[in-house]
Image (cartoon, rainbow, N blue to C red; front, top):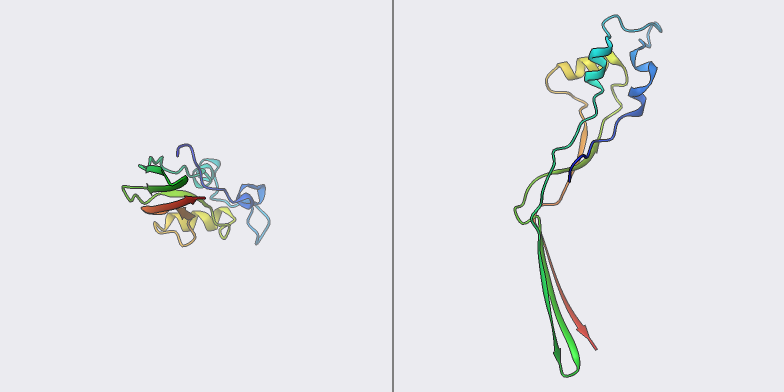
Length: 126
């Protein structure tokens, strides 16, 4: 998986993002450069998974018996499959303070892929 990004918060991409809701004027500390840094869409790291699958079928007395097995994510990697920005900090000042703290309280939420999974299928064709 490559070139995947988390979903943006649309409300943060409006002109209201730079407006102080208290007085209706732009935040004095807001710059377009810092705004672009805060609103840069996060790209997920690329991931390559190792999967194994195989199967065999047999004809026994004019009937078929089949066995299929697979192992997905054989290396048991932890990886993000997607995510989204939270909209709790929908203005410049709130988002800037949250990000500048070093440990944002309302950072992005992520979806994760499964660890190693196994699948076994036995079929009987009559």
